[in-house]
Amino acid sequence: MNFQNTAYAALLASSLLLIGGCDQAEKAAQQMISKTAEAAKQAIDDTHKAAEQALNEATGGRLIEQEQPEKERKESSHTI
Image 1 (cartoon, rainbow, N blue to C red):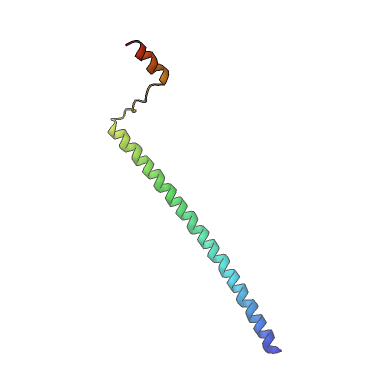
Image 2 (tube, rainbow, N blue to C red):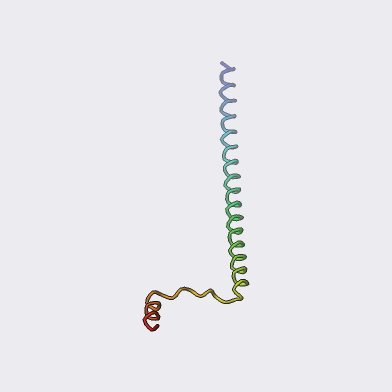
């Protein structure tokens, strides 16, 4: 009977250690995911900024002329 009590106590203790280890692993994984998400966001922001700068340099600082609205195109075609 003493052996059974010892076995149950060992099983309970190992279960508690396993659960505690799982909680620590989950917290570590959440921290890693958070840091990875922040790094990805920063990379996207940096890429966006570099693309805007390259576009600005390519256009000489001017905005690219947008297409005329449909109404203005029709009016200009009538005057020709």
